[in-house]
Length: 282
Length: 275
Image (cartoon, rainbow over all chains, first blue to last red; front, side, top):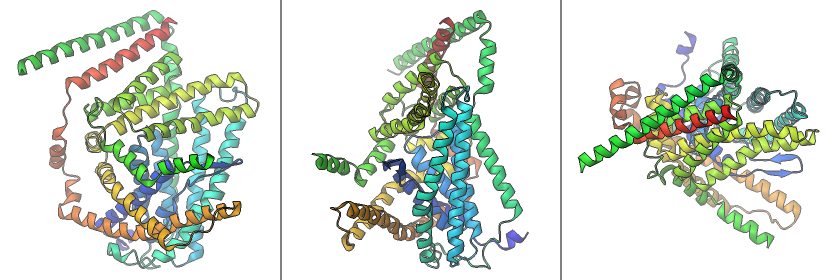
């Protein structure tokens, strides 16, 4: 009830925020996808993270629209446009980006408060990175059979993932998320809102503090993300199913031959038909 | 020699080059065999080749799937940059892991599971390259809409392809104007180079400030134009959706494509039982 009373943006303004964040963050992720990273020793310097764009927009506008826009932008520009769409696994990235940006956006009540903006920016980034790391470790554990049995693999996965997290958090997180957000939010505050026909956010128009509902919602969304990623990666049920089936080899072979024969017959029939159709047309 | 080489690479990697590659990927190849297939069929095909490899660890099956998607990728005439990104992506996902696990005392036995993992990753990403860069964006978004994806997503895809060239150009102009007015630090010494790098990064960050304001204006115009046409009501209206999707047609070519894929997979399974 209170939320509807406190509504800060109309539907079309929310759509504007969505479009704005999508276009900007999409462009930025496209760059990160294309710019090669370079390694200095063991520290990887990549312009990995343009998360400051959705972060600052989420602090200024409706956080949910900005978060969804950012995730959609990344999906469309850098995954679908470049043909790197990973299917169900993309859901994980989509949801973690949404959660990170949304939480950061909800944390800030007054964008003029620099300290809070900084804390929110680093929290959002850290949250997103941490969720990604957890999912990545579990993913490799499920994808490779006999994970523990492969020599040296578990340690190497923990080491690489843990190191990547620290590297991303300290390098990209501070340099590309914290500092630009601290620079942009106060500068944009009061200037960008009128362009969308809105009033700048202050204590009165903000959505209120993070409640238990938000936290529970985020945990649920993360669980969905984890489930989707593991479902996309793990193959346990089907592998077992196949193994059980392979016991009766003759049945399997017969089934396959029939299937292949049907396919061949279908092709032949279609070809003949298509030829006839063309002949009629001519 | 070294300087020349790096200059050459940098020349190639300008924003113009990126824009051209992305545009070519989106609109440059709508006359290929893959692009003429029905998007719904292709998406269903993708669903199979994007998911099943994860569930199967049979080497015959995986190789057959990989070969098939390799052929379709060649047929779709995907832009070179995308293929390069694919190669880099596969390496960073598994090749890197191999090196590190060798470092931690793994041996040749580590290679086989990682090879299977690589095949899985490669098959899935090539299948997605085929479908998502082989298809026209409009056809792709129509196909997604037919499967009941939210209207927002198909709108985003169409919008993204149209707005991207403009955004890139604008970003480049802002960068150029920064460069014209700015005073870049000298970069002959090592520290100068580091300072130069930080200067560049700072400029890219700063460039987003005017870009954000401009894009805000533009997105307001876009949304208002959409509202005039009644977009938010049309998005949920069934009749409008039906009219939009009326252009989709499944032809014999689509069935042929599906059955050839099926035949190949069947043969692969047969081979894996025989050997």
